[in-house]
Length: 542
Image (cartoon, rainbow, N blue to C red; front, side, top):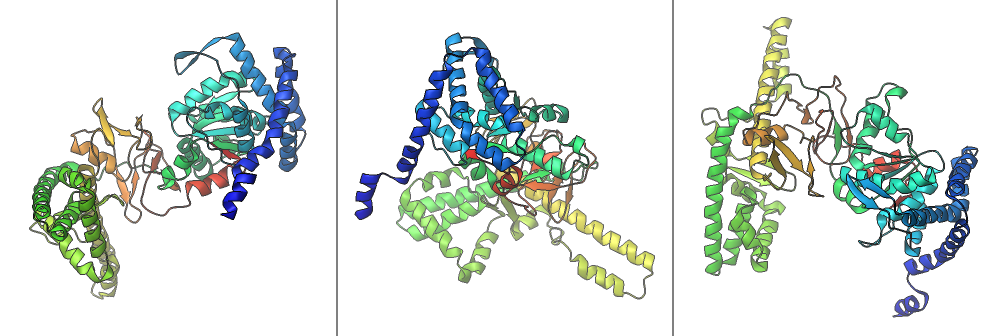
């Protein structure tokens, strides 16, 4: 009660903070009035004067203090330039569409710019002009000559904002660059050399990895440094999209996948599993109609294990009572005391699907269906034990020992490749849906971004998954694939490098094969950690 009264009298912390910033907004508007009497060239000359003054300050901290000092004037210059562009009504193109500048900063946008400059998060509703807000701190920090970045979620937004807001920056005498996924290194280097650079989080991340993991000389690097960055849609970039890693991987010259060989059997296996799950779902509906909620929940859980996207299951999950029943059954089976029962339940299916980990696992019934004559065809041998036995065999010469070890290693690799191929085909058939996760265009599988819904031509899933999806649809677009057994990394590249690095993101790969995202193996830090390391002064987020 006391806290509620104090909040009513004094305001919330956010309200008090905005109140403290209000005098700065007043000063900005005062300078804006003064600048109205200046000519375009005189206003533009202020940019050159500030850049020259800041270039004489070598210490970053002292430079930062100077930026704080000139903030009201710099923001006023941007606002005044926006007004002049609106008055001139000049036509320009943004993403090949004609546009006319019609924006001038409001006081609330000036507040947002101050907050971003000070390294805080500015939460703004749709329509409040986040794109225009970013021009204020980007202009101010670009005056240092160290570069300023704006990180957004896709290539279209990066290009649109660079061309759109670039009208304002160019009017004030600053240069603007934009990073796109299909640019060559020389062009990227040129874009990074601009005063302000727009781009996506993945492109900035991949360039950072290439510069710090693959470039052997300073001349091969494209980025010039990390001074100031604004992250657009910060919750999406640093939380939603930061759960799985970016990967840069090396090439494969020999294709070892056997997707076409296993595809007919996998299709039969998936068909049998679908029939089994449909029958179980029908039985679950009958149990619910008879009032046996516990038995119905158990059958639904069984369907969820074998076919989590079964249409009957999804319809039943819309009913709160049935959803509670399946959740209760699932929780009970994941108790330590019922692990053996859960294993036996899974063995009643041909395979199980785990949507969260994106994995498929064959049961004994499924293995027998795929290869009934060889029960050990899906079991990896214990190489350490076998190598020890070979070494202890006194009747073998050194050459014979090496030969037998090579044979056992080859056998293990063949087994591992078979298991991997089947697992990826099951994932392609059961977890990836056409026109949802991907589309078919020009006889190619094109990935659809799960966060934006936009198509991403030129990107490929890693770990052989893209080839498996292509095999499912009879597309022959895959090249050589080899897989490192321990980390399960996919190598699909024409570039002669074997280096592999990671940056927290999701499992995609560039068309060149040099860059991909993956969800396996060792992870070397989250996107947020890498962003902190890369952009030493990541001062703001939208």
